[in-house]
Length: 372
Image (cartoon, rainbow, N blue to C red; front, side, top):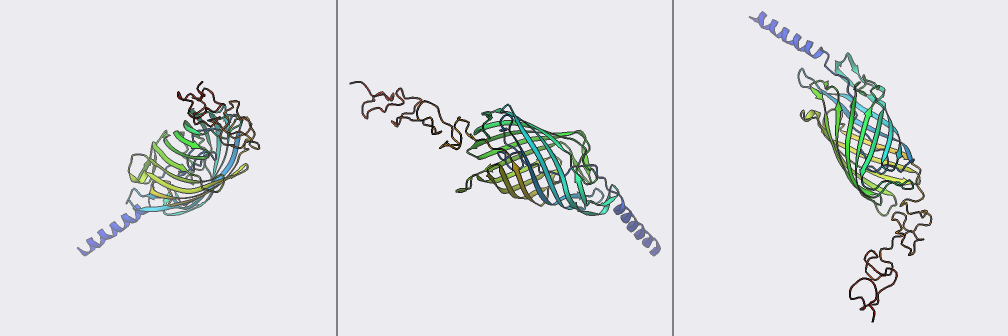
């Protein structure tokens, strides 16, 4: 009996060792969750609805360092292990505006460096350290509701709705989890409101994959994307804004494939250059969601010399962000004059907009002095 028991123990230990040594199923996936906005008028991880004016363009580079962005949950025993410890990624992008409501962009993301090792082979490998090329992306955006951007404007104020479509080209590195090697696309509905640089916005999107991708015990399929953002001014500094953002995804397949991240940062523009810095934390750490993320970006965009598109150059415009109303009254200063004669009756309702009604002699409140 002792020999039989010893034999059973030996067989159990050997079976466990064989199970641990078996390669785990890990199909090609692109673990990158963060995609920076294409211009300073967007937010941090998603864009605003407004596009650049016709023929206007910008270029930039956003980099970020992700801490433990990829873990695997083994299907054999459910143990969770880090696959990538650190990943430094950069996204080169350029964008051009067309017809005031449309834009086209090209993004070239690169994994500058990542490091990580596993105790069990994934596709025959245990080391995932090195440089990688991610899938380049073509992006188009259209603003179908809200003011269009004039050629002399940077971006219009007010509410807006837009649609963004992104198409990755699957030529990146599969071995370092920088490509899914299949067709996919993102479709995002963008809604926002901006006023003199400050703004608030939301995003609701869908990521489509031709085929699901398995990684250990988890499966990546179609994903719902969502985000909320605020961009408040930081007084008294000029052109300095805060960035507060919450983004997430869900595949409706359980917590391990859901993600949720919160970010806080600042954005500052000086002349043609915009600098962005932010820190993020993963609250729900599904596939590709790091514990922490540090973000830095720089973009260059030729600024207009007439921000409010009122025909008065900013060098002579006393109200560069508010357009002149061009009603024949002090139209040279660039400031809106809603009540030319200061009689507390708005010009739109004033029958005598340039002649102040004598106090007590405008009983019908039409802005004109009543006859004797």
